Amino acid sequence: MAKFLIGLLVGVILTVALAVIGAFSLARFGTEKRTIVPDNATLILRLEGEIPERPPIELPIPFFEQQSASTVKDVWELLHKAAVDTRIKAVVLEPQGISAGWAKLEEIRGDLEQFRKSGKPLVAYLKGPTTREYYLATACDRIYMGPEEYLDVKGLRAAMMFFRGTLDKLGVQIEVEHVGKYKDFGDMFERKDMSPETKEVTNTILDDVYGRLLSTIAAARKKSVEEIRATIDEGPFLAQPSVAKGLIDSLRYEDQMFGELKDRLKSGEIHKLSHRDYLKVTPASLGLEGKPRIAFLVGQGDITRGSSSDDIYGEEGIGAEGFDKLLRRVGSDSSIRAVIVRIDSPGGDAMASDDIWREMNLLSKKKPMVISMSDAAASGGYYMAMTGDPIVAYPGTFTGSIGVVFGKPNLHGLFDKLGVTEDSLQRGRFADIDSEYQPLSPPAREKLREGIDVSYRDFVSKVAEARKRPYNQVEPLAQGRVWLGDQAKEHGLVDEMGGIDRAIELVKERAKIAKDEKVALVTYPPKRSILEILMGRTPESALESRLKPLAKIARNAHLKLLSQPGLLRLMPYTIEVR
Image (cartoon, rainbow, N blue to C red; front, side, top):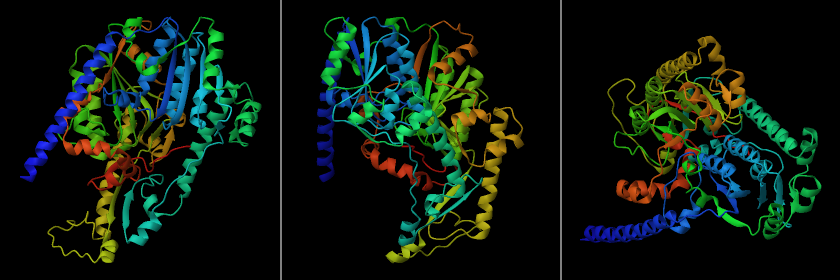
């Protein structure tokens, strides 16, 4: 009886939810038909939080719709449209609380610089700015900030968290085997500080990112790199000092900023246009699309095996079987002339990476292909890109990390503290190799090393073949080391520095599409509505999406992947340069 009542209640709630969502969907559909861009419009580009690669779920309810994140491609498309749209007179950038990586920021900043070439005003209004927001703002021709604001620009810092002390107290041991002196995946569990190898890599990353940050700000603010370095050493800044140091142009309240922009435009009252509303304007309506269709296929998140029943449009991560279906769908679509595979992944399961690598290579034989790397295309994310096709990355892309690792927890000490015991019987010499109650025996460890070594050699061999270089030239660049994009290019691991525009140029060349011919960029997977989610997802998967913040914590610690059997091709740690 209780189950019946619960089922009835859930059914009523879902029915009401579907009715509400359906009503809002119909209302929005009618509104979109009447969307009008004023002749004297100023586009307000508000960027907040994460800027994903994959389109988020569409929820046609005003509050949730306004909270939905714009993708990197969305921002790229918005600025390209605004540059040629005669109704758009100016763009106001309002970045706040951005958590994207430096590669995505390089893409967006480059798009802003490209928009400036249109001659239209591009101004930034900063609210609680950190270095990320300020970096984007320096692409604008004028930077504003409130009179009482605080410019939190003070340099960069890279930090790692270690759990060895906590695990010792709990009686938990994480046993890790890996190939390559830089593949220090288990250090967060086995050490209390950075290893010399980790410090070496992290210092090169900091030097590279900080050096480009200084040179970018210096060029934008018309100062020398030495002046900017000295200035940032005095940060963070109150409002007045930020102007005195030449980092901010003017301190104005937001209405005053718009007043000055109105005077500058000399075209009457300013009509503000939200970037979310402007997304509804199609590139085709502005003459920015042609007949040739190019797939923009996005792979984002940790790589996992998945199952044959997995939704190919899954929200989280790259499920191998689902992603393979997507690759095959693109390959069999005769209307698609070429493919750009956009990768934003630190890697994951070794077998899943290999399955995707196979399908990527099959697709490469059917369609001209170019790989475009985002914030990260490392370890398994780099492995899947080894098709021999051109690879385009940003200077700030995390890539490489060519290595293999295996890890498992030994919870015997924790069980002892809890009074839990295990009594097991086995047949087979290595039947307990993945036991959470027993440590690895020397023979078991040797057995694991055999598998890891074979997988590592296979990884390096695939890189050598795809990059058309001898094995002995690639292996020293492997060792599990993470490289930034510009470092990877120097060592021949990627081909060019650039973003979406450069990837389009290259794939048009390979598809024999004229350089000046416009193309239609078709995103895979496409956006999904909440109706599709409710009709296609289980209550468990819906609950999982609500627990996304907790899942992210687990993902950062790699606990989710550690709980699965098999070897991993995964970045040794998550790097976030603040």
